[in-house]
Structure formats: C-alpha cells, structure tokens
View 1: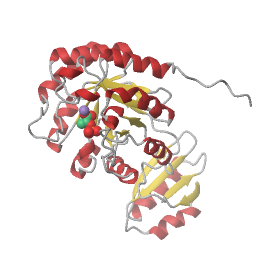
View 2 (view 1 turned 180 degrees about the vertical axis):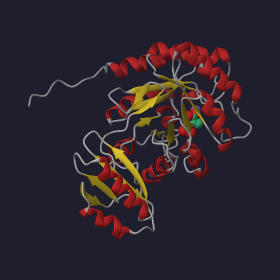
View 3 (view 1 turned 135 degrees about the vertical axis):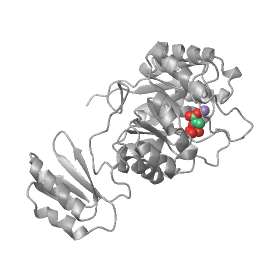
View 4 (view 1 turned 60 degrees about the horizontal axis):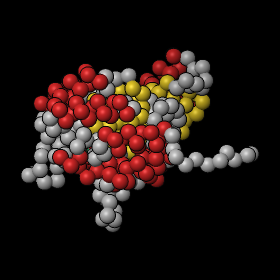
Length: 339
Ligand code: PEP
Ligand code: MN
C-alpha cells in the first residue's frame, strides 16, 4: 500500500504514519519528493485494515494499493525519475550517458588505450570485465584482481568512473573497494543471494536483464536491491533470446520503453550484447536513445580482432568516435512540423 501524505504534511504526521505501518507488520519506505512525501508499506501478511484506516489520519491525502508485484521500483511509489550518481556522473537525468570500454580487461596497454580512446570520444564511464561469465570453462575467464588494479589506474589517469561485473557474493567486498558501479550480469539477474549482498553495499548497481527474463522479473530483481536498502539501481537491457539466430540476442527496445513507464529507475541499453554484431551497434544505439533510454553501454577494443572476448561485437576507437558523433548530431532529421 502507498500512503500519500498531503502537501505540507508535518514531520510528526509522517512519523505517526511510519509507526502505524511498522505496528501493522509492514516495512515502511519513505520517499520524500519535491512536492510531497509518500510512505510505501511493503511486505505481506500484515494487518491491511490498519493501513487502510490511515486514510483518516492527520496529514494523509489517500491510501492506495500498489497494483504491481514490484513496489519500491514502481512509478506508482515514485513518479519522479531517479537519478543515480556514479562518482559524480548522474545517470537518469538530462544527459544521455555513454559507458564504454573493452569486454574484458586483458592487459595494461589494452585497457589504457581503450580508456583514452573512449574518454576522448565523449564516454562518461569506463567499463571492463575483471571476472568474466563465459559460456565455456575453456574460454578466457578474466584477470581478476589484477584487472581491478588496472581499472583503478585507468580511472586515475582519465577521471572516468569504472564499472565492472561482480559474479559471486564472495567477490562483492573486494570489487566494491575498486569499482564505482557494480554490474550484475545477465546470467546472474536472479542470483538472489548476490542481489541480497549487493543490497547492502554502498555502491550503485547496474542490473542487466536476464536473456529470458520478463520485464516483471527484471523489475522484481531490482526490487530485491531497493527492498534490501540500496536505492541506487540502473537497469540495463542487453538483449533477450528469441528464435532469431543471425543476431546474438534481440535487443528489446519495447522493454526499454516499458521499464521506463513502469519504473522510476534509469534504464540504459547494451547494443553490443544486444546484437553481437559491430555493424548494427550505431543503429541500435540511436534507436535506444529514441525510445527513451538514459544511456548506453558499448564494448570498445583498441584492436577488436585480437580481443580475448566479444571481438565481433566490439567497436574500434574510430568506430566508437563515429557512433558518438552520430548520436550527438544525427545525419537525418525531420523538417520542423508546423502546429
Ligand atoms: C558483459 O557486459 O561483458 C557481459 C558479460 O554482459 P551480459 O551479462 O549482458 O552477457
Ligand atoms: Mn562482453
């Protein structure tokens, strides 16, 4: 249930509502908007009648049921978009933010070359996998902590905040020491132990959509993070598995628009994994911008043909520069339409 407080409700009135919510057996989550405050009562099995009775409490405008199974991530609970601050870079606000870098950190030279190239082309964050979820156990698994140190060095040099994937609960503390944004990979979207651990860290989370997860399941995975105490979550659509085999995945543009409609959280798109094909990435990047994404995550390698992972979908520095120019100044625009 949502308890919408009146405009100008006093701190005591809000405190009273919170006390009643707790007493009724629910967890109160207070969202202070610019206009007014909302108290969301989440949980199950509590005394619902006591919540409904709050309708008559001083300072309460109305008590409404949250219709979706996800609660705290819902637009019903918070209509204003959430802006997640990643070491000074706001995601979900006015600016369309591009995260770029190699699939995997492979060496100091490779990472620094990628970091310099993406920075000079206008990327705002640097990505790079240190612990890699590979389909085959015989493929390159990442450099681990050595890669974390290299990412930190690249951040020191370029000033770009860094994002890297955390695959298991045992790595959360170590990766949090280095990374500014912790990525939950598609294969781990429903790793609930990992989500619970990440709910307790003081770092924003980039939550990728599972390759066969519905939008509802994706938002419920995000709900674990918010309900567990971490409000700084960015959603990432990275393509789903369909009957199509000529692309690696199918980038689900409708899901981006739907997630933005249903949730206040920022949503970015990953057209690299979403297509698996370098040639399609500029088009799908523009499409993601057009459907309302808040940003992109793009794989860029100084020399894609030598990449140890995801070479075919990695742009080289020149390809990335072109993509960034085209996003900022699309080559085709419509004539202004008179009213
Ligand atoms: C990645 O970002 O390199 C990655 C492995 O992504 P996903 O989890 O979407 O496959
Ligand atoms: Mn990759």
